[in-house]
Structures are given as C-alpha cells and as structure tokens.
Image (tube, rainbow, N blue to C red; front, top):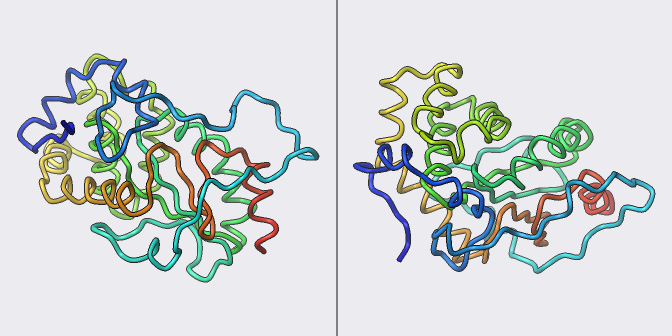
Length: 242
C-alpha cells in the first residue's frame, strides 16, 4: 500500500514522522513510497578524498529518450542554466534524502561555477519525494515561486534540523518564516491539494516512464547515473560532451 496522504492529514502527519522513516528515504521499490521498506541508495562515497587526476566517468546504468524525458509534465520544470546548453542534467531528488543534500551542498556549487554559469550545462530538478516531509519541502519550494532553488538550497542545508525531528511541521514553519512565509501562507501552501497531486505526479512519471527508483538519479544527455556524483565524476561525464 502506497503512503499517499490527503491534504487533510499532510500537515498533521508532519508532526509525528519517526526519524527512522526518513533515514531510508533515498531509495524506493517501484512506485510505492513506503520509506520503511526501502534501503538507501549506493551513491559515490562522499567521504573519499577528491583525486582529480585519477577521476574517471562512472559507468552509465542505462539510457532514456531525451525527447521523452524533456516533455512537459504536471509541473513546469525548474532549471538552472541556459536552454541551449550542450549538456542537460535532469536530477530526480527527495528533500529528505541525505545523499541528495550532500550533492547540493558539495557538488552543485562547483558544477554551477564550472559548467552552468558558463553556459555549458543546465540542471533540471524534479521532485521524487519518498515521504510526507519531502512532499512538504517540495511544495514549499514551489510556493516560493522565483525562489525555488534558494528554498531548495536552504532546506537541503537545514535538512538535519527538520527531517526526522520530533515536530517536522513546526521546524519547517520556522525555516519558511525566514524565507518570507507567514503562518497563513505556509498552511495555504501545504493544504494545496492540486500542488500535492502534481508533486506526486512528477514522482510517478519518473518511476513509471524513466524507472527512477532511488535518489539522487541523474540523466545526463540521456544516460542514467545513480548516486551523489562528486564534481570530479560529473566533470568526467560532462567534459567529453562539450
């Protein structure tokens, strides 16, 4: 049975999510978002020291049709970079996934400086939540409008302060207030049934059409890579494409 929550109990559920359910939030089986039944993904080891000279591109774990991947979905794509960049990176992530947070904190800043800001690559981030907290995080990012990526960045950097704590709702509210939300706009966002349905639709499409089953999953010019890539690994993938 999938854990799909209606707007009536999404807010209340945030107050009582056990930490153990969130620690397993980086992997899933099929399209069933049951956090306690899954095991973490096996990403690139973030603890290994960088060795640029020895870095080589990890082996792709499949391919997808880029035209199909880039077709519009339930929500408009949020993108960093230019449309005409030679390299397109589509990332499926969960806001409560520590491997996703590690990528956004350590690899993305260098990726942005080296490839995105120079027009060589673009990054499209798509929602793949495994639990109600991750759904709420993405909904708040979407409600931030033009501040989608800054809100995502804050939530990833503050992940330990809201994902798996005793009262996720209150923790998210405090972070959201610093981002300009009021109590009213916070609750209005998290009770927006259409937005919740759309976030879930993005996840379902990723699972059904592109076989996403763990986070982070990256599609780079049509090739599939799973796990939190280091800047050395992602550079080894991108450089031959330029």
